[in-house]
Length: 146
Image (cartoon, rainbow, N blue to C red; front, side):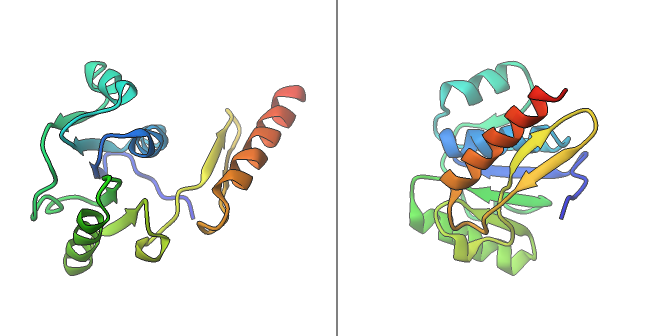
């Protein structure tokens, strides 16, 4: 399912590499992203400097999910990620928990974008490395026949 995220408010809890991958994907589809994390990886810091995301430098706090259309939990603490999931369940907010596929309302696809199409590839959380390989093959194929 492809959903128009233009203008949708997204909360990313976490500032590491997994958070970066998800943020970069969502930015491609027009989401308005706020990151809550005590620190950021360099690439997320660059996105903040470019004003592509807003950041609150602190740990996740209960109640942070209020007012968001979509929440992503990618902290390095499984208990915090689960707390975020529980809060989203109570509020009816769509959530993705990076370290536990059983707590995800959706899975992130690997995305190939061209001027003509958007291709999403997903294994239902089973084999992300295989999906990454397939994405690279598709990108190579499309580039070859462009």
